[in-house]
Length: 185
Image (cartoon, rainbow, N blue to C red; front, side, top):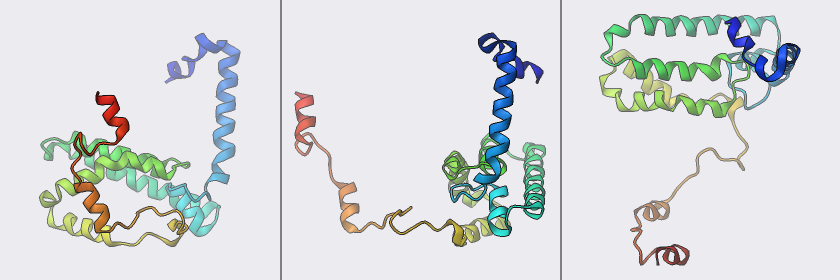
């Protein structure tokens, strides 16, 4: 671990490395609390701070929730022998936990949880009945109001039959745009 702190030394020198770590620590500790109320922050700490305000109660609940999630992850790793190929599940779980456990977990970081969603969708029929039901319920739970975005910034765009016909449109050399045809010749 100490070796990791020394990695910047060849580039910055001894005092430069110490300055680098001090500045990093100052940046992390001074920007965390103000960013908890940012609408794009999806961390556990942010969730409780938005619901209850920044304070000891929200920090305690975030810590307890984080511990519960980490214990759940540990259980998954301990029980890995029960799954024929546990690497995908374990990796997906860890990727999902990153934005939830980091106090500055931005919503776009949830994209790294895509493998977890794919696993749930692809192997839904293989889940035990209890987990299958929980997955279906989780899909139908509406998001909390604080996640609502202004209507002018839609997350999902409604599509009509015309949009679907476009997807079916056969893309051939004859239908390609003129710039593409020039490139082919």
